[in-house]
Length: 318
Ligand SMILES: C[S@@+](CC[C@H](N)C(=O)[O-])C[C@H]1O[C@@H](n2cnc3c(N)ncnc32)[C@H](O)[C@@H]1O
Image 1 (cartoon, rainbow, N blue to C red):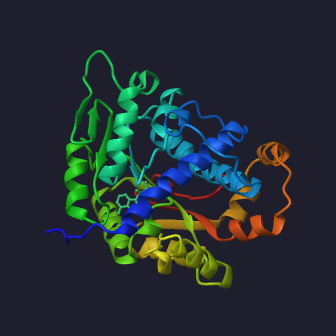
Image 2: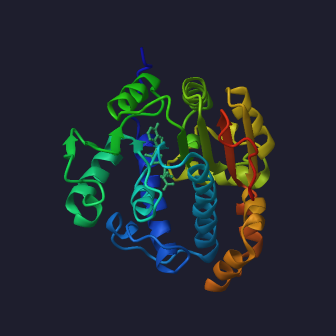
């Protein structure tokens, strides 16, 4: 039986973080940091963001992509991707434009977010045509969208029973190689709820890899200010205590049942990107706030964990 978790004003603020992320991504895309032909359907107009924010989003998207590509190279496309707290992420459509479209792509978020995403997909031919094909129909029911190979389902990640039911309805298979994505999501869950969710995946999916991007080092002075500022805007980070130094995050993931795990702060990730990519991004905008960017980079981390033989050697440059 799931714990009953009542809906709060804080949940509204957490849902609002998706709007922030989508706007920031669209701004960086318009400035040329990376290519995304689909983000424009999910947010109409954006104000220009500060260069360190754009640079941070570029590093975030590039870092996630680095391991998504590694996973697909190793496992092939007969696999599934489960995007936890997907927001308006466009990865499904971006992969469809490559040779790497996967067998089953499942997205989960609060029903308020998934219903809105379903609605946007339905309204836009360019999004819809990547989902629909001649042999299968697209079914949208109570905000959930199901099609052959793409499922967008609403649930609360804090309720494991609900997550399991929604995954089953999305034709999730425990035997397929599985890539779990958690981009800026787990920090909104209390550590016990995030632990229960991750422990479930580590126990039930024998061949899976998890890629997490979120805050780290929140226990130091700069981290405390980040937590306080967000809380003052009505958005408390229920999971902030789980966002310690990267080494502690890797140890936590191993303790939850993953066979191997590693974690790096974003300064390390940035340094590991190819020289050309960094130079291109650095040339896009003048950056005055170098110190602020360094602080931000050392307060976000990329963590990767694996069960089975998917990432025998987890490394940034593998
Ligand atoms: C900062 S946004 C990130 C969205 C997307 N992953 C990205 O990086 O663009 C956080 C997302 O996590 C979702 N989320 C947070 N807590 C959740 C929960 N308990 N259940 C379902 N979704 C949740 C929010 O609704 C929001 O869409």
